[in-house]
Length: 113
Ligand SMILES: [Zn+2]
Image (cartoon, rainbow, N blue to C red; front, side, top):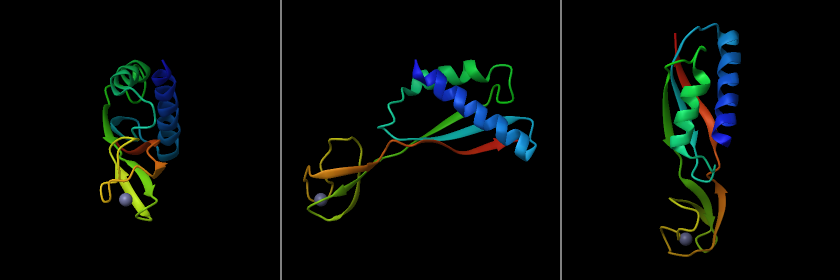
């Protein structure tokens, strides 16, 4: 399950931040996740609970901000956002969209003590 290794890297980022900014408790972690990141949210939440156990982020809430798929519509010649990879352009209905984003998986911010 690759969600487990994702959470392990999230926790190591948090622990490095904790040393750098000298906080000792994490209450909330906010993640931005694109639909193309290939992350199963339920598995991610489960893994997060397991990986944070006994550490600085134990019992921290995990808040997920689901990002849209960003693309470039060729007929419109402008950036557009769609819900899924193969959705048509919301403006012209074309499927000639080049995907430019949606694979995000990053910590947006945290609430700490
Ligand atoms: Zn378009």
